[in-house]
Length: 330
Image 1 (cartoon, rainbow, N blue to C red):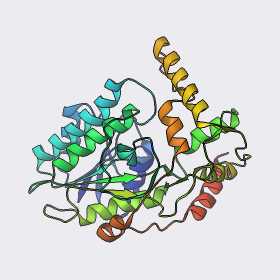
Image 2: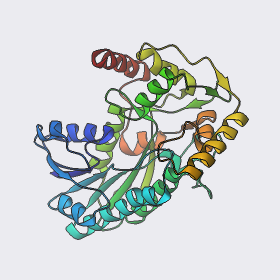
Image 3: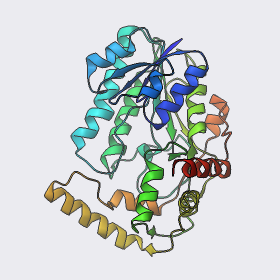
Image 4: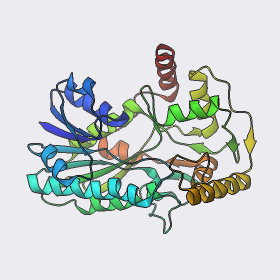
């Protein structure tokens, strides 16, 4: 089998690539950067933008399966930039699947596509998309997820996975940001300390994608569906953040800020950064304030039943592995 992994050089994408290679599959990775470590594994590299339709067509040629992982994450930026990568890029992947007769597409979505700014506790996949989004990332990911699920049919089987807060050794997003903010003295606990959230360790997230691919084919029961993916053990957000800080030998977060104050700071940051055209990410936005102060954990019974998913690496074990990795790199 030959598989295309978009965003194959990223945190999750590279974990999926390594599993496919270990399984004996041929792999093509489409990413904007060059990744010699993947080339050393025998991976075919296509260095291009996911919004380049011709490049996506070239990368997908001869493939039997696509893992569409590439996305623009983050909490700040122009809507057009998020739309170009997350929506147009997904449209290009779907067009390539149709052009080349590829019959399986596993899409990496996000639980944020259903986040409405309020507590979400033990919700399952029946929860609807909100009418309004507070940031460009969840809005464009929701548009893309809908496109992918609507494309499921007799010739192309599609499934969307919604992993929440992926972390672990090699993370280039969540863990580095938490550590950097802590070192800069910019971490504040927002709102109640007991709000629980789901996360997912990198190996478990990659496992879920391979499990979905194994069960996916035109007419399969999982076709056209979305699945939440997590550790299955929600914990208070700030306990998790403090666990990551402990793995980096940093002290826990002790200072706090009321939600109302965080929302006011977020509004002010958005106004200033927007008026001045500052492209770097502001220290706070209203969406981030809501994310950090609400519960969001999900029922993963559907993934367990339909995909055979079971998180093999516990949060405690994952934090031990993260500590070991950080100590070696530091």
